[in-house]
Length: 377
Image (tube, rainbow, N blue to C red):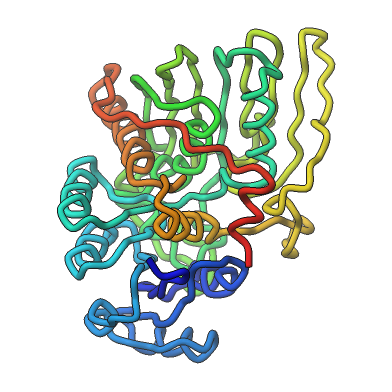
């Protein structure tokens, strides 16, 4: 196989700028073209980043393109990814992969039939902070993980997002939008999930947009916005996951995992960096000694200060996995298991019972310093 694969991007909205701007950091791939239903959006990105603007049909027929990144809205992920596979190209999708397990199984069927790869964000669990947590757990720093808590809660996004309506439709909500970051990291740190149970609700049937340019627009809420789930893992650990857009403030940490020999405090899985803390049986909580992981080094300014952002690492790892003939860390197997976890949480809330998962997966290989450096140009 070639040492560099051609990449096309379908969907030229806000998130596309991240892939365009960060992809040059990584070896094995080169973005060559982009497409969008709105041709002017594709032309704008093409001019900005020096690639070719094409129609979706032209991009899928482009022989120089080996992998297509699907950055469309979640409701379109399945149909677009299916079309990419049917065109004979590998797929890397933004999260969530699809909106139902059945859709994911159909993508698996086509990919297997055509000997193609499917990968999916999030890749933030490859960040320096989360891989440091993985290293500490793998080395027995807190013993065997037995329980833990995860919290991702806010008042929502109608106060800041320019077009927040789709977040509150079927296929949106905090579980499918933010849950992927937490579930992917839990799979990274602990392994697959066995069963889930949940209570779900919504505070209001509508939301009023206060951001521009849609200030004052009333949008319907069609999916739960307040979810309290309990996840039982195959290894026996039980983790609480609270995801809500009905909370104005709180003091819960993003992720705490409790083991037989101590506890570990993991920063926000939505980001690559942050401080990892841990304690032993002495209950003395201290930051873990920082390490020179390349995906933990701050490379961007944000309103909250410098931040490490290496989104596209998952795509790069998938491309190098194809070139090297190994398993990709953001694989279809793990993404599909994540979809099973999230949709089962929502199903549990609807039906009032625990749901046994029908899929499983392996933990991804750890991404240490040398492995991360090997992905960079």
